Image (cartoon, rainbow, N blue to C red; front, side, top):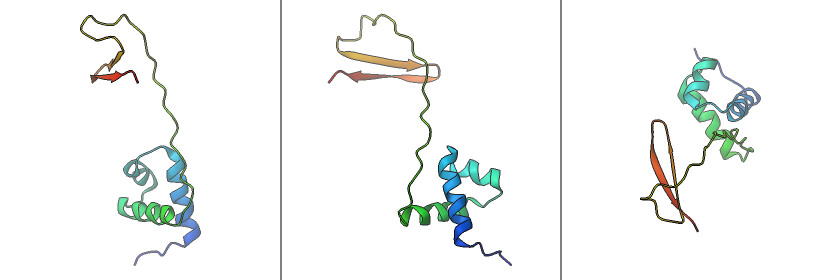
Length: 91
């Protein structure tokens, strides 16, 4: 038989998930919850208009280099290990 969880408890769990910065799958695994259960609690919390905690911003180190000859002026090219390069046009 399933244990019925009261609203204050699932609301608290949903809030803790939002503040954790983890994916739903990671958080559910760590808490021993079924993924679908966590997903429904988070959905209900968001639907009720609860404030959603924003995940922390992750800053990555960057290093400037001289532009390559094949990169037009006004274009920034970003690349990293294991990631394809991305070009952004100056606006």
